[in-house]
Length: 451
Image 1 (tube, rainbow, N blue to C red):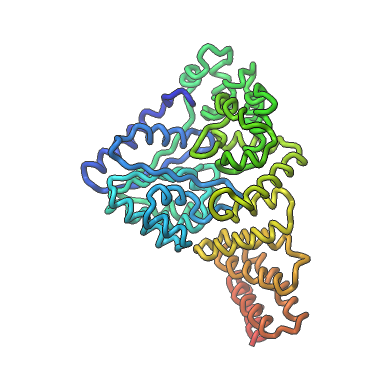
Image 2: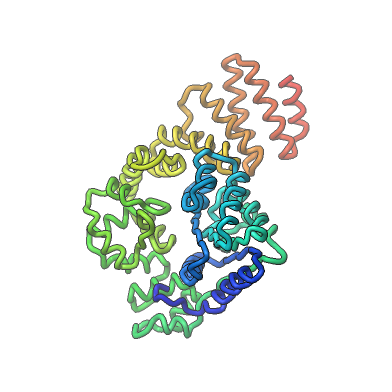
């Protein structure tokens, strides 16, 4: 829906602007929650709203990244950097989610009225969700309009975001569920195209992304999948532009220009072609796909050898970034995709430790679990330590059954080495896990054995 004006979103924009007006009159903040399926136009709506805000209102934007395991406090990093001062210092110091949220709230209160938009929070890490709770509680007094968006079709029954959303009720909370476009709106988008608006509506369900990609592809029939529509659109690009697009596709968030230079032998002069085609959009010092579904469609179409090569180049470049310290979460992601076991072990372990320090037990657990898959041949003492780290966080999360198998492996290592103190510690952890999954009798046996 890249025509400057969003179709059939006037009511939703009116609601959001009404919340801003009410906030200005009462000096009280609030919360707005925007939801809908992938491709329904949540980000487009928020960008339009953001662009229409009065100039006197400070507006900050953060986005969650679709990494295998998200970065702790990922969507708060850019808002904190934009604010500077206390929030930026807290992030740099690796502060806990509560402290970061309090610092952000204080900084935003000083420049009230303010708007904080956090997009795609279905990808948020555990630490970010904890920070959400604090910001939501303080939004009213801080004269902060706190806006979040999420994909409703990605919230499975046990998704951690569900609990947070359940707590956001009562006065000051506005919810917007976006629906698909009507057949009339699709006809307006199609314009002079020979495509039949009724058929488009029937095959796409009015999903704006599906519709716009099908129209851009200019095919006689709507492709059976979004992937078909995406590839029909980018097939018009030159060979150098396709090479560049492939590189952007393997980066699950904004691809910095310096990173693309390291990943491709082609000149970046074709970047303008990618931007002009509408496949990519510029943001800060990099580019990204206009739609995550489009990125996935391109990434999944890459031949395995080319995908591995690109991930290896990204890994090498990110290991020695041009600015700032290495990002262990991104490094672990590309290491796994490249099949580089030693790198996965190194970076996933470091990412797990950092997530644990910031209170993101769920993310720490997933990083340690990832590292363990590549830890079969490492030193037994180091493997036992990694197994116990995983178990310690899995106890607080949703992989307790897997944790029992892991702690049994750690116990075996300690026994073979004759380390009775380590064995006793691991047996105690085993008992705690067994109690949590209802195996109390075995837990009691482990306690006696530990003693």
